[in-house]
Length: 114
Length: 109
Image (cartoon, chains in turn purple, brown):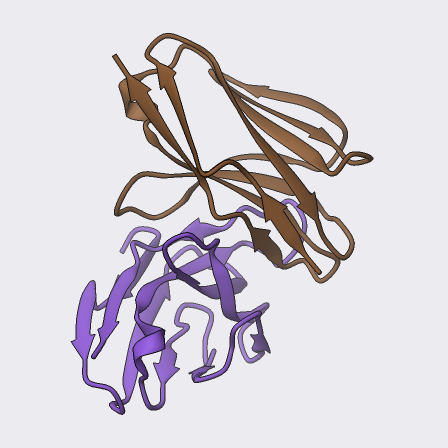
């Protein structure tokens, strides 16, 4: 693995189903983030983790949960998907949480909830 | 509230110069980032400014005025591969990035 990967690349999901989006990085970055990107809107932060074992809520956390059991992995779970969760989801990481630390993005997961 | 404003779309000619403006209002301020995003791809980092002034990096430069809540990204010697969306993001007092909706830059030959 080189950098940050996400799986699946795309998914069509029935409303009410549970879904976990996977994110793995091999850069030993401490901080990780989940964003959603919708047409006409900026990236919106769903959840973040400043270091393994800790997580925090972003701007739009409702309907989503995360865990950070180790440094490399940061899965995002939709407990019961709804159509408004149709979006492109990006996972990102940075060496540290804070000012001049650029975020590196995964390739994204395109999720459609019907 | 927190807000980032940038133009939705701009058009420029290959070989020319273009300036993409961004204004921001955030609770606290810990720097201003610019990212490039090609269609269907992930954002990639271009620049970071935390002090007033111009930062130059090859064909790309970024400017910040903290007192005015204003930044711009300057792209010189435009190439067709520069056709992309350019995302402005300000870091607030909680070290979270507040993102603009992006400026789609169209380059014409």
